[in-house]
Image (cartoon, rainbow, N blue to C red; front, side, top):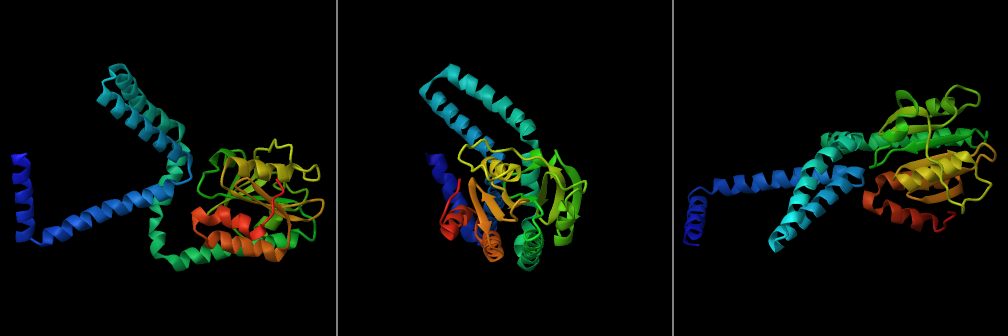
Length: 283
């Protein structure tokens, strides 16, 4: 205890003699806290966060077991933590890569004008393409990646890596063209793939009037936080799915309002706003 008091006294004395060190220490802590915050925000909602939560849980169990004196449990927890993290890195490699890419794009925080212009470009492309396809009953299925990676479904499609535009989206879904079947997946402002296969929902509550495109959109919303747009080939009706919610027969105006609110809202409020805006469920 006396040694600790001596160390504390020396520490505070050094700060008094050199006030600049106070600023350095505060700045040091602030930088580390900022990067931890950005990393957590970049990984929020991804599968890798489940891995991190699991690791934290195992660490807590290990600490409690060691404190109580459970040597066998402590040994097992050590093995799980050591080899489990390595296995998790291998299993969740795509999610880790996606999270690190988002973390690397944190400089966009200081480029809000550019960010908004990219979102505006995406919204305009979606609205214009749907406005063209809906009255002509051109079927379409467009999935927009959010915080959770869609790499599993991207790998099933034909790579495009093209800038998003209404003209390209319309041309992809023109009937009897090579790319019109399956889903288009958008990541950021790029059309990553066309002809991708999405998981079909097995819910028996879905009306029989909705076909494969709608079931695929609902299925994706049940397995990820992707926003999916559907244009019916039979009726031309516009539908949206997001986090298990399915809204159909939207007007062009409601569709545009939702997109603008969705992309401008904070991530944690999007789901609740979805319910407040439409006020009805069809699932």
